[in-house]
Length: 481
Image 1 (cartoon, helix red, strand yellow):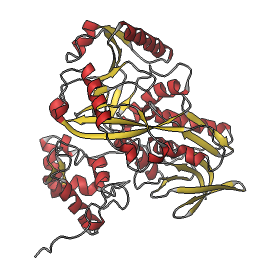
Image 2 (cartoon, helix red, strand yellow; image 1 turned 180 degrees about the horizontal axis):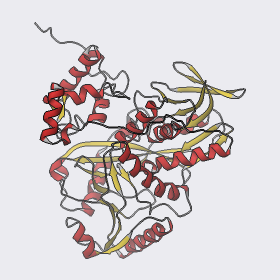
Image 3 (cartoon, helix red, strand yellow; image 1 turned 180 degrees about the vertical axis):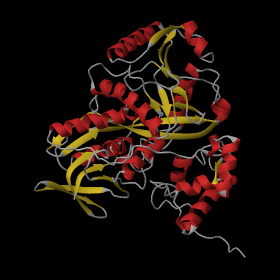
């Protein structure tokens, strides 16, 4: 019997696990996939928003600004890459300037720090590659970019260190209230829990309806992206937005924490039946054309021929404008509709829900032995002296496997044994960035498979690309003599 079970291990579920791990309660996280951060959290713009976009008085506004501050603290404490580079919302017309003024006024009401409206000249001084026909921009220096999957993994690992249980490949099939607790039936077992938190992303409506009549409708929305080679690093130095519309914040152009440029997304509502089928994250010629046109409106000289990858993510939009963080029935809570700025707001969302649960009678006492830290070895960022020391201690650091990103054999082997270990090639990629460079694993991929098989003592035929049972190799073609 667990005190609290969280359904979903994206950034929302992992953040909740992290915050709840500070208390003397037993917590379990159920995830349908084989790792954290494999859905919306994996494929998004990786931005910690400043907080000027949400309507004042909304949960989005309150929790965005609070979450931005908390995310900065968490990233520093847990050794997560985060770059506070600031954002610009660019105006291309007088009408856009009116929207910039509106966003500025919202930002002031939402208590976004240090925002200001820039003239055309001031904007171009910050970003000389922008369209010279702009009218000005809103500047928010508190906006940042983050490594979203590393952020989620870090919070999950600290939760595990503090005795939270993460259970993967657990798709929830049924939930029944039995006396003072719930019985959660998955495709593998039955789990008993006093409280349930539904943080299942695009599947949150499905989980909600296992215990209650529907109170919201999920509207899955696909967004497509370009990821550009390091040759484009100097294209922009800030997060460059266009003025928002009803369908989203427009096409952005922004640096990533790894030095690439990300471009996108568009916004396309997709059928419910596409979710989790692969169609939901497929790229389309029409979608990518629209993204390219939008990007060139902001930065005419951007070279999309330097794209090293296209990908898509699915937003967990609903028919409600605001986040859904509320009690559904006694001891059952929804954390649903966590669209943008959900990545930013995640830690604040968690604290908000925990306070709500306390008001509803949950008693939480702080642990005396809580450990709130996490350190990683970043060989590719180390000095020559530090690298020499690491190699002397472990010769595997002397063998570069991913040449694009300078990731070593030691990095890969250790990722398979860290607190929340990688279970696949993509899992290794999320922990080490092996395969994220120009060749996208074209050269290092086979070697990564070989290392996983060797380190885990399994056949290469058993190594997954990402999801459980997504084997890369299907047979041995010839015998090695």
